[in-house]
Amino acid sequence: MTWTTTVHPWSSDFDYLGHLTAAVYPKAFEQARVDYLRDRWRTPAPAYVVAAQRMQYLKEVLEADGPLKVALRPVRVGRSSFDLAELLCDAEGAVCNRSDATLVAWDLETRRPRPLTAGERDALSADITA
Picture 1 (tube, rainbow, N blue to C red):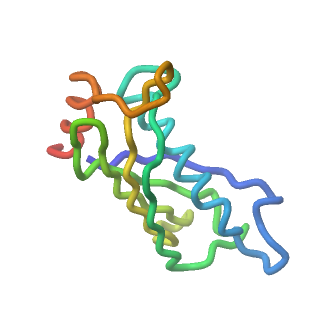
Picture 2: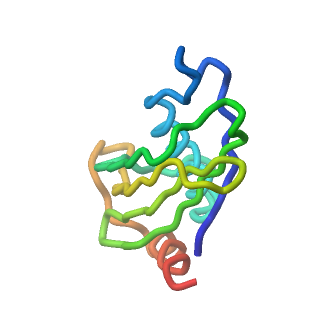
């Protein structure tokens, strides 16, 4: 299943060339991940860290292209980590950036990776098969 949310960049997120700065893309994906995991894991503060992220910039984003949409879906669930396929699209639905991210469940007390709980794993796995 693909989950989507809307992202509203600030005017300051656009550089002197008039397009969205490269630093804003990971921020938009991170915002979407937090919202997605809050919803799926039923927690206000999902505990995870980003272990890896690979992005492809496919089309520039101008301020007039907003609001932006982020679509994501889990593609793999492991013992402690999971992979997300992510898209950042303009208001017309054109894909502007493609991201693949590996996230790791995080233990706030030990400051180390932790196994996904059964509920977390089930929620992610359900979205893979949906």
